[in-house]
Length: 492
Ligand SMILES: [Zn+2]
Image 1 (cartoon, rainbow, N blue to C red):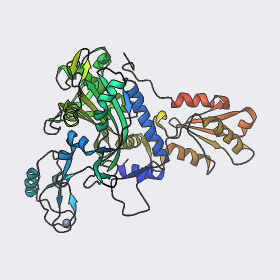
Image 2: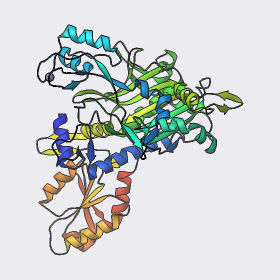
Image 3: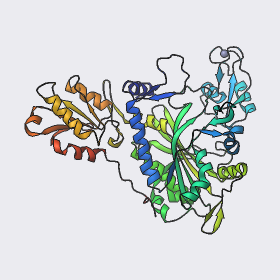
């Protein structure tokens, strides 16, 4: 199914749509979630929390979205969170040179080229303004952070461009007050803000985005241990910098140097298992091993978890071994001691990060779950991710069937997200439920009034069976239960 089609259905069913749809000139890069999107996003985050945060014994915080200037001085964002851009000398249109080059040449352009490199590549390829055909001015830089002024004096601060900075700056306090030991993961879900130059890819490049980030703090001398044993046999798919695919167990990835150590292998296996549980099969996942040119200068190893969708491979998670870059920088600028005690040794912890894009992941879960053709479509979401867990229908709208159906809704709604629907033919109601990903429909008919049973219909098999009304709650609970995942116990 094309992404346009998926976006159309998602909008029609109330998953997500462009911000301020009543206003035609709303800037690109902003998105509103409708009722079904809110619930789906919340359940994907809940699955992430269960399969990564809780399962690994991490702690979670919720930091402020506005942070003082000094934080971004230390993090390097003030000097280097920039994107290159070129402006048309005639019509003033603004472009990213890498995107223009990709459009013109059909080849991928590294993201980290210098301005002069872009200018010479563009001259060679004869790139001009795509709107008016005029020549473009030379490449310059734009800092993508949104600046805000605090109070009447307008004290300089910024909307965070990534959630992780609060984790880094809170680290010394959390380490002490939460009485944790290395290695420890600290997690956060929240909004980030990036003033992208020309976001055109809808949901893929947003100016206000949702992230779920994990920062694992560890002693670089202690990267093995019983906690990571389970991951050794987990097979991961890598795409090497030379473009070749390699499937191998984590133990082999570590011994061959593709992954620096078992600790990192364990987290790569966890994130892969999370997406599998979210309905993204392993066959369409890969970990793209970033080359030295593609990764940040402080990064010791970096992988992009990518998923294959209709439009190609899409990056969902940046997995990055950041060394001591972050804690070192904040230690220097803040004057706070960021070292901690690890069994008698004073350590400035290293960081491995899993930075997950929630909006992209939600989109991918929707696209990969869409099945069928024409006007008969099913959103085959994992039942524990379905925004509406059951629909309840009266077969006809008379003779007390509506009241009987509503009383079932009343019984179920404390524990489940239930939707009552009495409009249209029963076939039409099933079709709507299928397209919204509802795993179970309960239909009340004349037999319900006699023997207190209902028809339970399964979305994926379309099988129907009679079940006692008294068992509906237990059945629904079994269907929508979150999975138990293999791997480490929450705490050793
Ligand atoms: Zn132009």
